[in-house]
Amino acid sequence: MDDIRKRTRAPVEVHARILAAAADLLTEGAPLSIGSVAEAAGVTKGAVQHHFGTREALLQALWNSTQAEFLDDLGRDAARHGGSPLGAASYLRATVRAGTRRHVTRRWRAVLAACVVERPLARQWSDWVGSCRRDNAEGTQDLIVRLAADGLWLSDLLGIYKLSAGERRALQDALLARSEAAKA
Image (cartoon, rainbow, N blue to C red):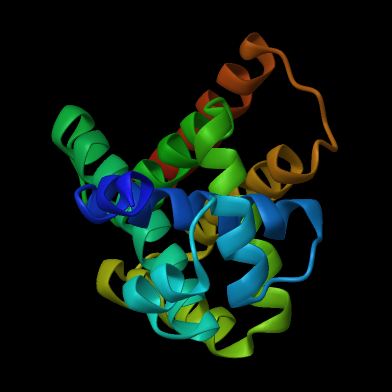
C-alpha cells in the first residue's frame, strides 16, 4: 500500500518515468507496448493508461515533449543571437548543441525510431519543418544549412561521425557563414 501511495503522490515523476522508459525501449529497438513500458518504468499498466491512455498517445506525448524542449532551445538561441527562432541559423546552432547533450540525443533517437513505425508522427514532423520553411521564406542556401544540420543531427543520433568540439564548431561556423552570405 505504501508503494501505491508514493506513486499517486508523484504524478509528474511517474509521467516522466513512463516517458523515459518508452524512450529507452525505443532506442534499444525493443517492442513498445503498454505492458513493456509499465515494466520498464516500474509502474502498473493502469498507471501508463492513466497518464497516456494508449500507446499512440504515449508516442505523441514523447514527440510533444521532445519537440517542446527543442522549441525552447530555438527560442533561447534567437534571444541570444537575434533572428527568427525557427530560422535556419537558430536551427543549426540548436541542432549542433543537441548533439552534445546525451539526454537530448537519447530522446530524439527514440522519436526517430517511433517515426519509422508510426507514420502520423513522421507526418507531423514533416508538417512542422514545412511550416518553419514557409514562415521564414528561406532560400536555397538556408535549405542547405538545414539539411546539413539534419545530417549532423542524424550522425549524432546514430554515432556515425565522431566529431571533436573543434570540428563541430568549424562546421557550424562555415554553415552560418553560408547562410549569412546568402542574405547579403
